[in-house]
Image (tube, rainbow, N blue to C red; front, side, top):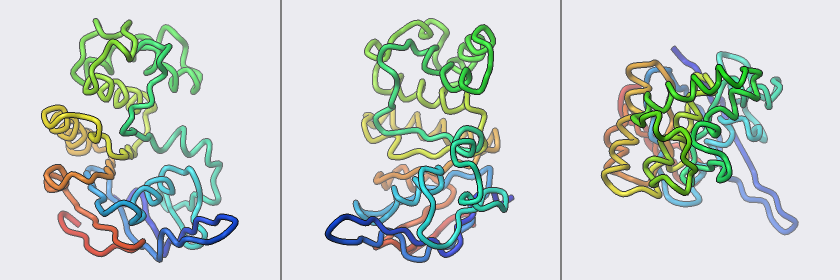
Length: 226
């Protein structure tokens, strides 16, 4: 089932001195239950594409649609809370909150009571391969791989259907990179998430269901399950 669609999407960055066209007429449909790897050189437009799908901005022209509704007609703050979750390369955990508190944070923003959120945080830690012993540890007490697992658990706690990951293994060693990527694949295949990963790693990209290559703001190639 098509969950996210791009229709002739253009996006331009404007400064006082120049305009840079980052995306140039991208049309594509993403289906739930698959992991997509978006690949390309720096400056190709892949992170801009991810930002538009995350609802951080809207296209200059064209449309990003979620379940057939254009994001520029939605309350974007609500869209970001309810439909998409972003996992970042630098984890973006709150340093003064414990692992459990980091996971609880988006749940409490949605009105979930603290006790219920705490219980769910414990379940999510186990779901990403960490025991509840990690619940009261601060990010500085965790390895890079453990921090990324907490970041994924926090994203899952948002209960969205779309997971967007911007270089999620970029700060990890090879073993942790493989483990995190395998976890994201399992979330797509076993739990039906739409997972879209921006990555430079050709080895990880080869494991994706679909590989999309962006060059100069356009899709130059798409291979895989589509």
